[in-house]
Each structure stands twice: as C-alpha cells, then as structure tokens.
Length: 437
Image (cartoon, rainbow, N blue to C red; front, side, top):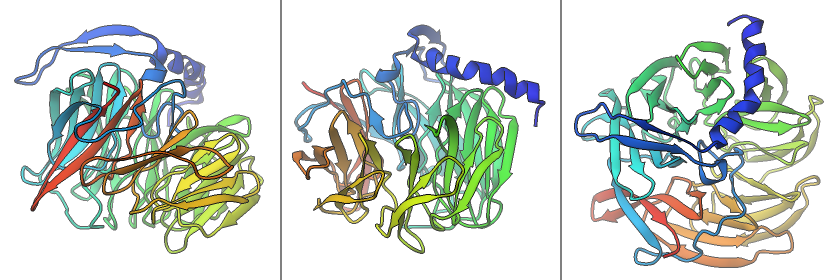
C-alpha cells in the first residue's frame, strides 16, 4: 500500500472526477490495430452516458428527463442493429461516441472487448484479451463474458475469468492495451460475473470464489494493486457498489454470509455484519440511510440494514430476489423476482404494497427512467410499468429477439439492448439501438 499522503492527495480529486467525466471535452485517438480507422472520442454529459454497471449513480436509474420509446419490435423503433460476435451477458456501456461490451467466442477460443459507434452501430474495433483456456463448465445460463466493463473517460476496464484466474485489463479508447493485472486464482462454481467500478484514482474489482477470494483497488493508470482484502472461501457473484449512505461514501459488498462496508480508497473495513446469504448476485441499493441486499442460495433473503455501523437490521423477509438487482424510488423499493413477479415495498418498514405476475424468468435487472420501470425477461419480453406504491400500472409490453440476459442500457432517450436470435441450433447476438423514429 502506498503512503497515507497518496490517499490524502487522491481524496482531493474525487469531486473533480465527476466534473471531469461530465465535461464536454473532445479528442481524437488514432487506431493502432490493422484495419482500424481513426476513432473520434467525445466525452459527453453525464446524463447522456452510462459509464459502468448500473449507470452513472450506480443505482440502476437513468436520467429522468429523457424519453425512450415505449413501443418497439424488430420492425418498429429500431434505429440500428449490429451483430455481436460470440456470446456474453455483460451490458453495453456508453461513453461519448462509443459503446463497449465484453464477449467470448468459443470457436476462436477468445475473450474480447468490442467497440461500436454510438451513432451508427458500426463495429469500430475488437480487442482479444485472452486466448485459449476457456472453461465451459459452470451454470448452464452463464457465459464466459458476464461482466460489464467500466470507463473513466480515458480507459476501458474489463474483468475476465480466464484459465483459472481473474484478470483486469485496461484498454485505451482506441483498443490498445495499457495494462493487465491478475487479481487472484479462481475456482469455478457457477461462473464469474462481478463488474469493475471506478472511484477516484482507482478501479475496484472483486472475485469471490471457493479458493482465494479477494476484493481490490487498482491504480487506474498502471494497474498496480493499491489495496487488496481477502474474502471468505465461498462462491459469490456480487459487484462492488459505492453509494453515499449515512453521510459518507461507502463500498458495499454482500454475500459469503456477510454484509460488508469498506472505505473505497483504502479498503479499510468500516463495518461488517453477519447476514445476507452465501451466494448473492444483486447489487446493493439505498435510500440514503438504509441499504438493501438480497440473495438466493442456500436461502432466499432480502434485508434492510442501517448503514451507520450499528449492525441493526430494520427488516427482512424471505423473498427470492436473486439475480435482478432492485430499484429505489421516493421511499419505496421495487424488484422483479427471478420467477417473473414484480413487487413493491415501503422501504423503511418492509410493508408490501403490491405484487404482480409478469411472466417468464428474469436475469436482467430492471432500469428506472423517471417514474417508469423497464424490465426485460430471458425471452426478450419487456414490461414497462409505473414506479408507484399505489398499485401495479402497466404502461406497455414489447417483444424483441429470443434470448436476453444482459440488462438494457438507457441513456439519451435511447435503449441499447443486447439480445440473441435463435434459428434452429444457431444463436446470433445483436446489439440493438431503440429510439423514436
């Protein structure tokens, strides 16, 4: 770990980082891979971008002032559609004029980052990060590219499980490799799906598993591990999430039968309680005082916890919110259960306000836009309904493609959806851009 002065200096730039990402600065990056052309990179406003898992505020909420389409199909409100090589369940992220996502091609035995033009959907470049050593075991729903990348405006950060270890790689916006760091060895159970996040000078990553689980903060510029904490030897799939709660920014991590808060700059443990369950997937949400965690193995578990370090649990129940992460809106907690049921609770008491069956099975997380929730199931059906505690109110229902596991990205009044079409025994993924024609 570097000296305390390192962190004192970095703390001063945290507020500045948000301003930096929001500032409209234009630059041109020359491509250095064969067949690539120069890529113009524009860092647009924070509300128009989606730079990491769960969006700008890390809570699944899109900018409320936008107006994405409420109706679509293969022939309606599709602005463009671009093929995605291979397979993956990671969501697309968007910074400036570029879209980034992870994929794995089994026939070529590669794991890659792919970049598209936000305007046209044209594939700008593909960078292969790992070759060979692809382990196809694990959960049948899993892929070898489950994670969502993160971008700080200058670098793209990708996490992959490859050949028995988890690696994080930083790429330039033109696809050239800047650094690659091994985080830990990894014993495969269900798969690997933790996504990196950016905070101040660091990119923070996690890799819970049955062997040498770890969570770590790396220097964004060179990949040096600034801090690293060991985790219990148990499988778990949550991503590190940083939220402003109880008067300070905390890094929350649930699973391995624990709910833990870290100082995101130093990795120092702020507090920890026994709770949650062993295997979790969802990302923590908050109302500013309580945090909400959920898990699904070996028991179903949803809890509201005081984030002031007291260890007090405000309420809990046995609802199975295992894979899709939850949403918070005006003091109410919303969720779409894996089994296809939408629910609403009063956030401070846990009082159930309503429950409605949608249909199908859900892996993608719902996204909040203003007072509307967009929720997509595994067969490509999307329900749009009101984020209202008075009752379930459906706005629209749409069908696209045959297979959807990635959470849609919604920004600048457009929906970017990673979906697959099945034709006999062939499966082809596409990246759709949905908008009002």
